[in-house]
Length: 186
Image 1 (tube, helix red, strand yellow):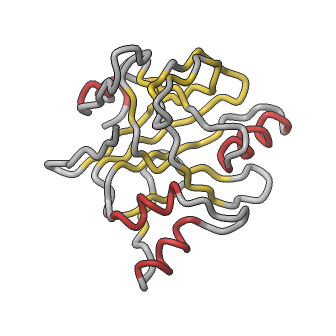
Image 2 (cartoon, helix red, strand yellow; image 1 turned 45 degrees about the vertical axis):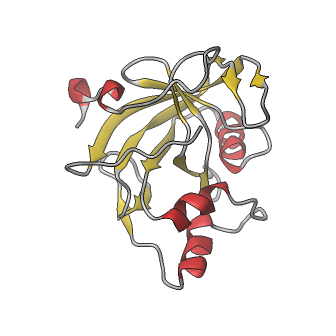
C-alpha cells in the first residue's frame, strides 16, 4: 500500500501503560544505512504512533541509527531512508536488540546464529533490504532536521521515561502478508 492507502490504524498497535503518550510499536527491526559508508544498521527502537502516517523514532544517542542520523545532519540534512520490519524469525528479531560491537552487521550475526544466512528482500520504495520472513514492512524516511515530542513511555525499568524531542518517521509504503501476525512486547 502506498499514498492515501497507507494507514497505521491497519496495525493493532498497543498502548501498553496508562500514562504512555499513546500507542507504541515495541518490537520492530529498524533498518538504516550510514549516509557516508553505506553500512547497514538494524536496531530495535520504540516507535510512537502520532497519526496514520507518522511515528516518533526513539533511537537513543548511543545507537547505530542515531549515528546514521547525525551523519545525515552533518552532510546537509538529506532525507534518510528507513525500513521497519515487524515479525519474522525470532533469531533476526533478537539480533536487532543484541548488544553487538560497532561494525558487526546484525543480519550477519543472525545468520551465524541460525547456521544459514537470513533471506532478505528489497523494499518497494526505499533502497534497503528487510528479512523475507517479516510479517509487516513499513517504508519511509526521516528528515534529519525534524523533531517532535515523543513519550512518556512505561519502560522495562518500571519507570516512565520522560518525553523528549526525537526524529519523525514518515510512512510511504506498507507491505504485509495476507494474514500477518503482529509482534509486540510489553
